[in-house]
Image 1 (cartoon, rainbow, N blue to C red):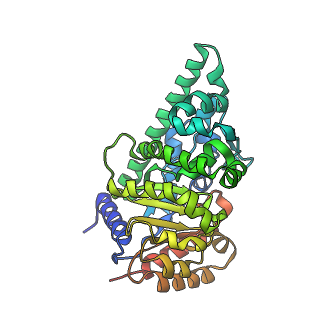
Image 2 (tube, rainbow, N blue to C red):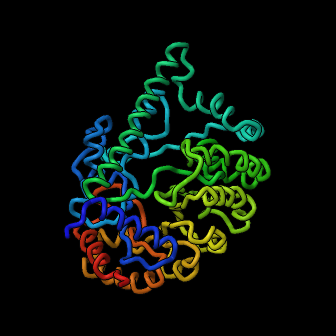
Image 3 (cartoon, rainbow, N blue to C red):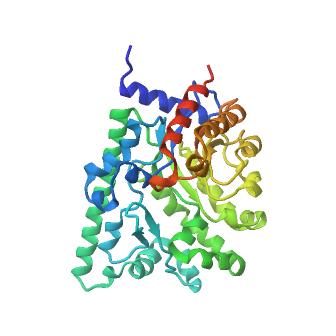
Length: 388
């Protein structure tokens, strides 16, 4: 009997859920980590689709026609540049290739303003940070209101496109989308939106107590963003949490400054019934003891620069490991070498469950991989990585 797309979708979700719980599913899940890579793969430039929901949906789903995956990371742009253009600010801009989006760091907060952030995070952000970041908000009324309304309309359309694209992936390809909301570690949030990388690294040394207090104060804002109006969370889809600074921190710095507030975010999500997809950016080997303090069977961790074999051995009983093959290998090595490597990874990491096969980094441009290699490796893992 031919399966419906809904039946295929439910099979794939079940596969992911069992894997996160360290049960052995029927096969090793294979997931797509990609954002703007989808644009190039579909033959578009960002300007072709930035205000065209139909083309954006097509771009983010085209790869499922030809390449095997059990799930996709996202279904639309994580950053919609025109939203910020209406406010005459924002840190995002298009690369010269017309396909990728870049981020330029702007430091919006002075180190002397920590007391204001600690006292009223949302009030300080709205009254001080936003007007600095978005010059259109400083225009006289009603110009500032019109700019805000135009931006809000684009934001609403942006979110609708994401929902439509996820539904399209489910209905046409039986494809689950892994995430539907995002959370952050509080210290990373302070770096990203207030102090910048150089500022936060200086604050870790010079203002550790204020930084820790501010991180604690931001937890309610972060949880509100993860919940998006809900009072509880489901175990699927996952809350996506990208982690930026830890790879640059010594274990003592991580334990003292970063970990306390981040641990509370993880515990809150877990207590609300959710599970997390956590991107361990950089190398986390020096912090594995902390990963083993994550709630058990709660998180998938995307491994970027870690040794996948060592990670499976050291933290694989606590979290589900996701990784397996470098983009550079898929781009530069032969198909046979890529498949041989994938076989070694499956043989070591798959037994006992708790493993998902994917690339080491999120694909951004069409040239990040040799597509023929990607197709061949995913098909091999799908057929070889069986448990039953």
